[in-house]
Length: 115
Length: 113
Image (tube, rainbow over all chains, first blue to last red; front, side):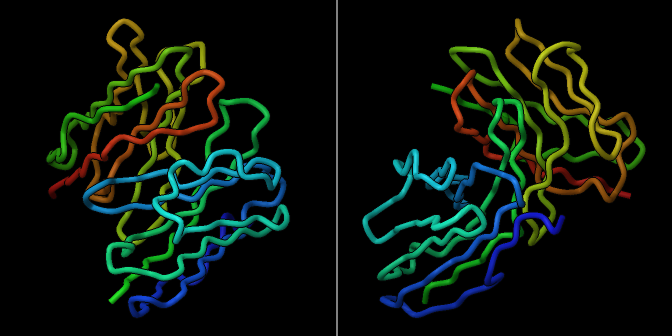
């Protein structure tokens, strides 16, 4: 398996522009997580999907952030409009939620820079 | 609520010496504990986990971790560190049936030749 695939790996955009990050989870996994990593805050959980349904989006910082999972093999995280403080590395992770002892597998991340 | 503490921002050791990265946790139910490693410009890689059973868990790359319920700790250890072990290490915990995986702040390990 190729693992969790994220695209793009790097994104540089101007303030105010829309940004869309993409994630393909591991085939067969039914749970998907979006995390954000910054020096100041470390790893923050943004949103969690189970069986394509958003279960908890309490970590989404503002209404400018939205996430979708239209099917089991694809998810997007959108920021509109983007701001410089959104600059971070965004990770997608997936796992097979049958029991709580399963580990999550992470993608390589998308490094977002908003100028 | 669940939380994880990694009390050391940095750990420096000489190659060949033992390596320990500390982690303590707080949960209200049964803890499921994990260690991940992150190399520069890479995602997090799973190292090992404790679910139940033997308190000493063995994982990838010669790492092991010891679960101590009375001290609520899950320290990561390697008997003989390599320069290639230099990376950022994260401890994480799930609380019982909660799906949420909470991460510590991370510990940067530097192994000098």
